[in-house]
Length: 481
Ligand code: UDX
Image (cartoon, rainbow, N blue to C red; front, side, top):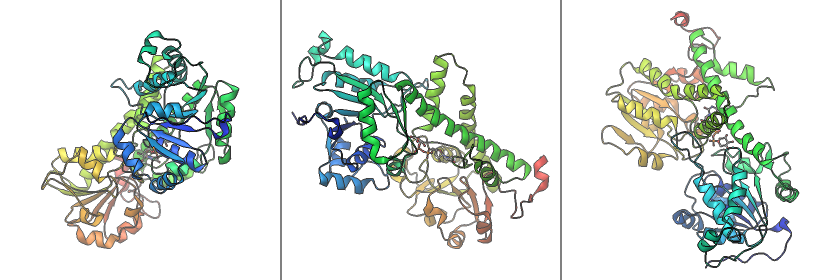
């Protein structure tokens, strides 16, 4: 068995840390902790991912990750393992970073979290601090604690029978559970790890408090200390609030179009109020990704389960779902009929800086346009391999292109769906010359309207196209339409 020697020294300041789950959260967290000088074991039960990571090639794109991985494979401070049980035995601080997908009901599926709890129960060879990092609903920590006690071989005769070979038999139940939710954004995961706005630690014992505050003290950032349920709720509330901000500004954007106002100026005007803040007021095609849609639904479900009427969040979700129609309608208004039109698509990832297409609004828009019979030429700097798996190329109907310029070739409109910096830097005159009709529909308000119009485009964007440079409505009559 691939066992890791348990460190003899009892001080937990240099204890080995085990990170379970090496996805978008687990791997950056593991490497961030290694960079802080800790010895880290990373494990995942998907052996193919572990093999890639061991070869220095993360299975997803995240800026800076490959370099940090290579650094800590070399330094020996990061050790990727397939044997999850050995990884549990080898660490004194266990970070749970496994997936918490959603069930069809919207509820968080905690099967992987429970599986980790059972594994910990059977491999509790010394004191361990079990830390939830995955986003989980309130009171999951209490369930973790109960599950570890229930399935510990010393307590459960049946579990003793299932005990992993090589695992020590009945050990004292010496463990704590803590909640330390992650706030890492994809595309900025390492930046967020090293420079977090705050660190939330939900603890139930002095020992756990001391371990976590020592662990994060090198970052010199505010630490919010709470109990575990509060920490769990903070995470869901943060994502729900940010989603609310986005849906709010998207409705303001629709209203701006009706009255000839400019949503970017409105966002700036309200965002400079320190009580509101400027971030997450970017109007556009709506939010996507693995976290916001799923976490919002899980939070709604939690509220319903406890009899709390949080229909505000149902409305936030409904507004977001309507963004696909809002955008497709804009494209239709710009090009008239969609059937047989050649459309260039810039951006497939759910946002820039990632190759992740999970719940990407861009892909929903692509599907809708495809259903309308448009001919699509797609390009994304990172997300094409993942998009191709979901939406295979179809000769003459759907083509993956090698550059933004290729996507624009022969197009009757170009649609901007992901805010990659590469697109902001495009040579607009060259793009225009490649297109059959120079129409640009900007779903992220990435471009400066004046610059695009000067380059010879008809430019359509979100919540600001009716306003001219002097702030006057270009088509005053439309406000009453
Ligand atoms: C989010 C949270 O920000 C992070 O703290 C949490 O831990 C994980 O979930 P992430 O999913 O990586 O991070 O993306 P984020 O940058 O928050 O963007 C989410 C979605 O909102 C994207 O689709 C993005 O395009 C959209 N968005 C964001 C807007 O539409 N407008 C904005 O102003 C900001």
